[in-house]
Image (cartoon, rainbow, N blue to C red; front, side, top):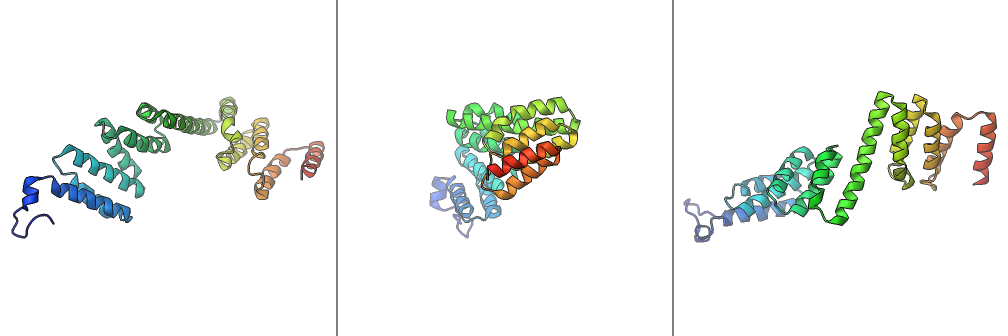
Amino acid sequence: ELQAESGKESPAVEENPDLIYRTLLAKGWEIYQDGNFSKAIEFFSRAAESGETDTRLQSELGIAYSLIQKEEKQEAIDYLFSLVAQGFRLQTTSDTLAPLLVEAGRLEEAQKILNYLPESRQVVMKELIKKKNLKRLIKEALTADDLTALSEIVHDARFIVESCQDTEYFYRTALAMLKLGVVSEAYKLLKELENCRQEDMQWQIRLLAQRLAGFDDLQLIEALGSYSGSN
């Protein structure tokens, strides 16, 4: 403690009243580095009572980071929004906030803060927002049994499949499409997924089994011949 047992403040604190809060802030970061995020929040919260703006904002940033580590992301988003609104370390706070918003499906809000990011990060985040939005649209089309929209959206999402990202998600999407009767597009998607994880034989067999399930005898013979020839 920076206060004497008598209750009187030390000369250093009298000269710099913010010293005690800066010390609490430093201790918070030390505990954060040790991985005790709940305890770190206690110190950051005490430091956030500082009358000095910079100390308070740094403390709130510490709280936000600790909440993220504790998977309490909604509360972390609230703190980060406040920090962005106050213009505190905009590149850092907005770069931390944007992915959390995308993960939460709050894409319009994420889009609005991209201007605070460096250009290279904007490109990355725009791609992430686009992918998240396409997945949201696919889910909505599946729920609504909107077959036309589903085919169009999956077509728009081909660039994700071609880059072999989220393969399990698109495998499940293909199965859902088969159940809805969007057979042609589902088989195209399964065929494209074969270009991914080519060394994973279990994956390749899963895809082949789904594709063969809807073939007639002639198609089955041709497909098996093609598969045998490629292995």
